Length: 408
Image (cartoon, rainbow, N blue to C red; front, side, top):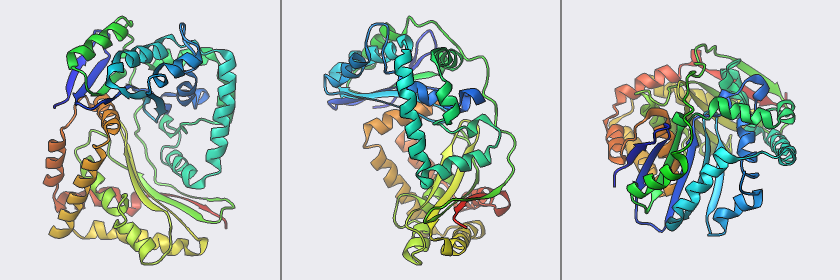
């Protein structure tokens, strides 16, 4: 069944794919995240994700949490640099219960001061826990290095000083400034007709007053490659090297997705895993990542190693990048890389909740969804020459930034 689309009069969009399974998945995705914060608001998008479940004009916090759990459903939320999402999985007969709850949470939350103060302690503990994990913190510090001075550099969790200062008026101000109805998508995968889904969505969301976005986000323009070493008393040296990369709507994005998977994707046969871990035993954790945003992106490689092996491991990483810059992939290598990523794509889409979130986020960003067949066709159309060009753009050593946590 193909994906179907509809837009309410207030600008809220709906995307749905019908299936016949008992369990349905639905999410409300909002185009607002940590990059939309001012310096004094740093962390408030994530903080709202915590306190938005703490009571509405007609429900106490317990009743919000119990509304779906009482019928075996699962309610959750997350925040990214660019999005806030409330989503749920439930038996398909509970679509109306779920969408009514989403609308109540988003538009009728009361944000009691007692709950705000309680959640401050929870988020502060989350920040401290994250600081105890250098393998996690280094990614956020690396983004701050790349996007120095730009709002997209904001840590999603925020910093202790700003989190401690939040109050109800701060929350309401951020939501008014950033929760625009034409920047919201209701994404669904489940056993309900599209006509019935539209009826339910119209009933609970159709009377919301339009609040349309009039101000565009601050674009990422300047990038200066930077290298930085931070002394930390860790057992391992942690290293990230990378570059800014393609935005979500760039034609070269898919080629970089394939190269990223070839280099350090989840497969144990990735080039970096074979070179660093299997051949030399220099690293237990080695991965590459590509994150595309609305107007920019990040490609980076991470590994943790004994400080004595840091230079050797770094040299191996650079050799792998140089090989991709200097030599086209052979026919067999390219075919294997395509087959692997197509198989991984198919497996990922076995998860309907992943498909629902992916569809919603993609629709929010580019207003179109490629079918699986179209994506596979695009992967198969990639040429060795295109991948060589991408490698020389993104893996260029002159454009690389690096961040290292070392003990000496």
